Image: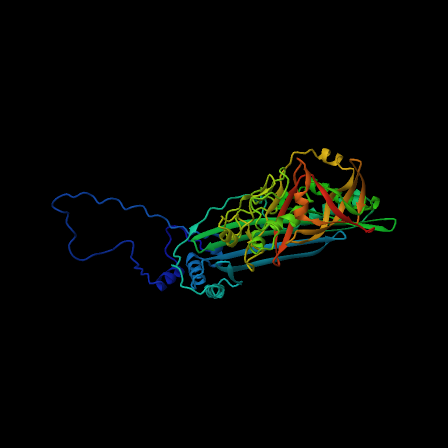
Length: 532
């Protein structure tokens, strides 16, 4: 990265680059020591002094972070123009430099530590609904040009006018890392894991094994687009994952706890880590008292927070615009129609401060937003990237996302949230004669087209005569997401985020997402267990 200050002479590299482009330079001394001939005489008639020279406007580059890797506006322009050379309608370059660190602890000892540093650029060319894509981990001008030529083959028409200059786009800030991970060493990370490990064992003597790992990621991206915009963003994130195995009278139970945010080291306070370790142990040992889950179709109350994963999987994916553009989703053609009771409103929000699924811009450079998907039961919008927005003749919603520079962006969720409803959570529980209260899910699978789902309930309870009673285990919830949404009976006023967030998989790539839900009563979901 250049350290030349304003007023310094031109560097050799700049001279050679400019000369190659046809520019000329004349080096003049600052003072002429001698001269020949008579000195010039003042004019016979006084004349007005010439006006002062106009102030020189300093030219600032729209590129900051990636200049350190030799990427300047000239290289970007040449690559974009190569990508557009066969008549694509739009192209973008997605530069990324990412550092990911992993620290794992098992049996009280750190057993795995590694770091991954990733650098590269993806080149996308769009022609209608078609995409040409290539990527390179070599950021030399020739390698970038080769990737651009590969992506450009999706089109075969006359090239548009070349892009000659770029403007730096404004990027908002919905998260920050007060203590950036690039400034944090193992001496700060290992004590966090050790503290959580020790407190888990102290909480209950039935705890026999604890494993945990801490991941932190620092990603810097730059998006250069054929419309002349360049946008750069800094994207921190972190997750801590804890698992616990307890044993009682020869019987073993396991459980897990996750915390994830777009934050720095400040996220992990000692008090909070102790609280989470204690919560994990309690949710593990309560399974020793669990009874087999009932089977059959019955009312299910989803607790606030983590059960929002069902909203994400069974309903949220159906609102992604590419599935609707291709006619796969059950919600295709349903915009403006009622799909839920009037007390149901669902948003996908990328602006939630510091949440795991929040983004400042999406991976196409579109601004993030709070997109209302369902309002008072009416389907209002899908989640769009540029391609689907163009197809449906609407504006992009900032949902074009990718795992990294190796992948093209597709419509993906950010933080998918059911907003508060009109019901008191206690009222919801008391309305159930016989049913299940779902507190924590382990995993699940979904048929995105129809929205059919199956989820394993990690922690749940019986609801008997309007009260939460005994814990249950080995329960699977099976149903249709659109049907469950349509038949929701009550939505509480205690909405909470699932604090661990998650990594959502689609098109063989994963992105960080969040989800939130208030206490919600589902009319009927099929429950399967060992008795079924």
